[in-house]
Image 1 (cartoon, helix red, strand yellow):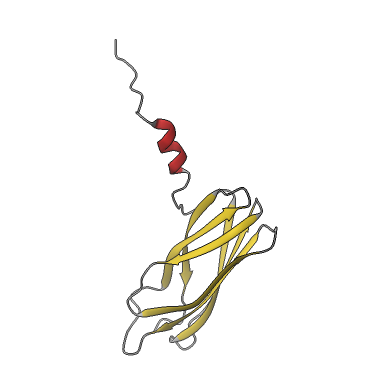
Image 2: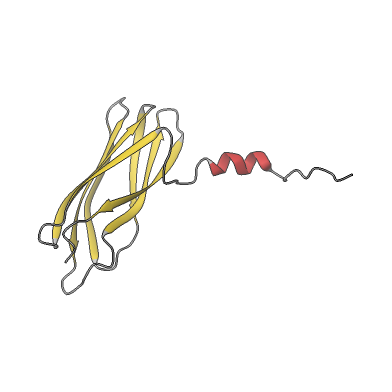
Length: 128
């Protein structure tokens, strides 16, 4: 008779797995907007809608060698379920984009202290 194998520290792994960023998080919706004007510079927004009131919103863009991400602001509406990230981006002089989107992670913290990460892809538009 074969014995059932139980993973050591299963509860710990399950708890941490919920904290890993995902493409789709059931209780968080993300919308993006903006475009590089003339393929050079633009203003962008990431809007977050959550089922629980948010205490904090953070944005961690992944590096894009030809792009400078500047003036990042991230805020949660006071006692609300909406968050917003704004930033400007510009293509560095003499460089060409290697991607049509800026990828990164938006992290939201609920009023209760639970942190969730959502993978985001912000279309840059105007790639030239």
